Length: 400
Ligand code: NDP
Image 1 (cartoon, rainbow, N blue to C red):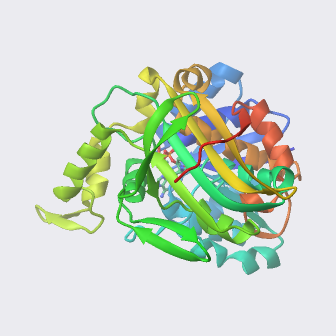
Image 2: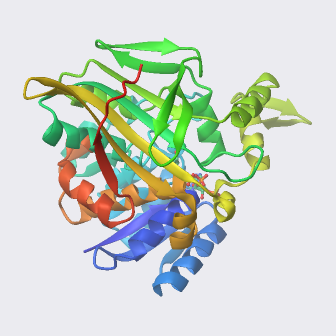
Image 3: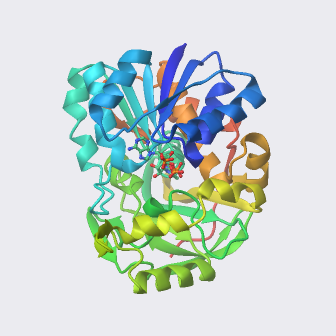
């Protein structure tokens, strides 16, 4: 049905490439390109063993628009699936515009020197994509991604009006290291150390980083402390869920993780402004990334589960109700299936499904879109089919 160019060869990419390779009817041809070609080749070795499928690999610096343009012209994909870093989003979107190819990513654009997490840069491409009759699908991971689709599903099937959404994200797994991040350390630490923000009564309210917390009983994991944070999907959901009064995002962290993070912050290692070291400019956070474990390397010994979902409260048939829609994913099982831990898996599977929605024409429109703007039903069906089954429960416990 189509040819896909996947950009980036990290933890998430390994899942995407394997999941696409398992569906040859949809992803007839796959090209994998990244900054370090040997990482593409390592992913493709695994794919060859599992599925006996050939995947073309290429070297690419996606910050250079013309390199991506040349690669697109060479391979003529129907879709570019971006699982490099958020810094590359705009450059890849420009290359897609220049060559007339649809675009998908899993994380919103961020300028490298400013941790901002806003859609404004990518939403500014709406008219350009519309006029070129192209589609860009933003944030097709788990959160953002599946959480947006859960909200769209609740809006379509479970509620007449949604008033409150709390997105709750728990990684209840154990990788056995004193300190490591589950996806790209630089992006992860920028996100966690940012001020908390939530949307209420039409405006954004902010909190000191990790200052608001509460216990939550996560299905499949148990009770964990979760912290209020800013997360990008709230920005689009606040606009697209009708009648919404408040939306917040919560993520769990262990004491050990937070203590390490506090020390790293206090000594200046999480900074994103360059410092001079022996005549060279060094960005502390990028140096820290270089000495931390590669998130992909955590997979082999990871035990435990992730448990992520949306607690949604609103009105149905005149009554106030609260539902919890969630997925539980097991680190050891995802490692057995594709050689990745569950955080990469829960991102990579929805990226593949988003691409499948676009290539099969189930989700099709000209412009730049967030996930909740399309019919959630075929996506929800595919989550059950391709490794991320979800459940819905009546939820009697409130989130404070
Ligand atoms: P990794 O750091 O493991 O992988 C990133 C890959 O991108 C690496 O292979 C890297 O190359 C490559 N890359 C970086 N810069 C360039 C460039 N200029 N040109 C070409 N390739 C480049 O990250 P993850 O796999 O953990 O994350 C991938 C994406 O998924 C990120 O954007 C992350 O924010 C997003 N994500 C989204 C989630 C969601 O739920 N929505 C959850 C988790 C992650 P090299 O190997 O040379 O460094």
